[in-house]
Length: 115
Length: 110
Image (cartoon, rainbow over all chains, first blue to last red; front, top):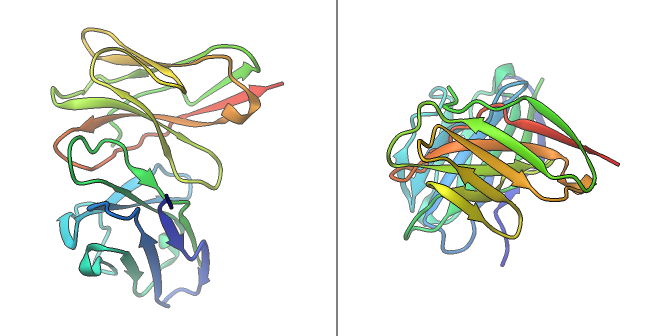
């Protein structure tokens, strides 16, 4: 079974540009999460989808970040316009929709560098 | 803010048993105690989870006392490949939000 995949693995953009990160969860997983780690900080929760609906977006830093999950499958996280402080590693995770959902399966992350 | 407290780093040698203790001073009744492992350039990976007493799987054991204010992750006979960051978390069973702290960087030496 394929794990959570993220694309691209690394992105370097200039301040003010737009970047879109993609996450493909494990097939059949209703829950999809975004996290990020900025330099020297802890991994922080951004938001949680249940299928195509945003269950919790309390961690989204500001309105420059837009997350979508069309059809409840893959998800995208768009940063527009990017700022220097957005640099970091963005992780996506997923898990199933039934029973205890404590085990989240993480992707390898997308390293975003804003120059 | 992280709800748990754990040592920033630990060193060990191959073949030794490693115990990492975590404080869960703010754990809620419906929280589960969960541990994740993270290797460089990878996402965190679930290791083990428990509510109270002892849980064991093929990777580790987790000891949780009756008051649930602490937990100890036990890794038997570590190898160099166990060098990683280990996170303890209070996982609320009714939400999906994981709150990570700084974790414990375990360095296994030959």
